[in-house]
Image (tube, rainbow, N blue to C red; front, side):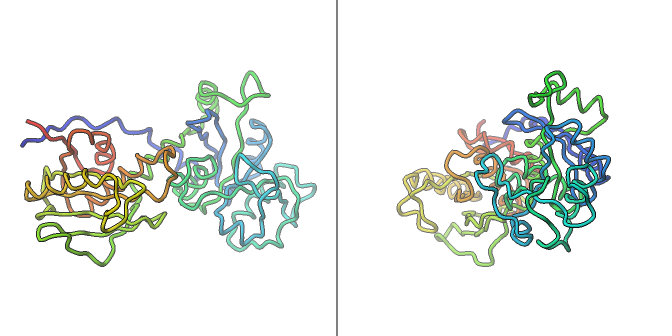
Length: 352
């Protein structure tokens, strides 16, 4: 068999300019791919009065600070009653160093205090004028929300994972949120870097480890050995079923098998898609060298947006960890190709 390589998909918009801006204490425009809406975002730990005033002037005026759940608990920030859109906590003001709490200076101090490692719950009064928002621990790889994206931006820029953000309003209709054309124009007019939630997802899928190899491995049969992996964010247990010596090899046949809800590892005795797994194992055994990646999708609810993209990236990381240099994907699994290419593993397909 031969392999046919085709050009990789175009790279997502680079997020380097946005990271540089956030690291320098400047605001950026964050585009929510699904809303569609846009937000002004800045690292909370370094936010200034001037940046906060800029956010207030061009937004709805509702300022939020994205925080890790552990920080919300440590600072005694319980959920806001009736909150639905975000994981909003009770509003706060800094307990000292402010006046009414509403000015840009006061809200900048409150935001910076929320981000500070040494702050305690006693450093805030409740209610106030800043809304702390609890973001998911895995960031955009767990939930593709604005709070997660804002915190991921701050973290990737070398700041603490706490970000001040506010929704941008329309240029011509200030009572409505800005749409995509207005967001692009606003960023250009003000010389701001722009980045989308999807860009951040792609950035993390291309760089984050996603899984760790477990210490123990085992034999499935005389010809197939199993290598176990654990998800970095969800603890999901995945397996690579390996034949031959794929390390350092090119054009290695790889099958990606997503466990159905009835499956159980390692026996798969109740798995409704067991025949597909058996077919893949038979194929790589016949080839003499290959990998079947058995994925257990615990992290997302069934049908959650981004599930398949994430699992494809997990498969690519596992294959990369095994030392495979390039892969061949069977017919029907072309959708995984983009993830392999994103991780730097050239992916072709079976065929003459």
